[in-house]
Image (cartoon, rainbow, N blue to C red):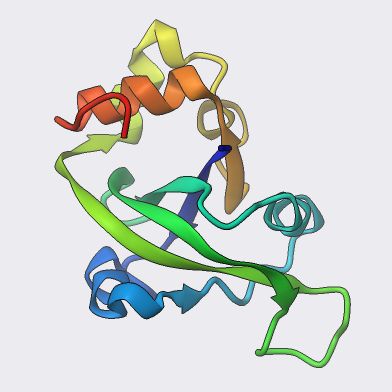
Length: 141
């Protein structure tokens, strides 16, 4: 299993809206960055990700799962753009802020720290474990 981070501005698409989609999940559409698109193309059903509120809040707030692999983005006719579907799994018991992540030396190599503008990014297994723990969840989930 691979781990990822999905960034969304909460006034555009929030954790609560993601949760409301329940088991059907939602297409993670509108991404227009080649690196982010390529990350989605690498995803497999069952991969897990963090749901991160950007701009407002700047914090990891929940855990999602890839529920459908990369396919054409329904919001464009341009064949260059793909996206996955994700579904909400569980909220963090407490949000883990960008400031907290940046101040933790164990997370110094995290993509979020070094390339905070990338909207879909990989997360290492150790980063996954640490952020889950910081968020009050079982490290293995």
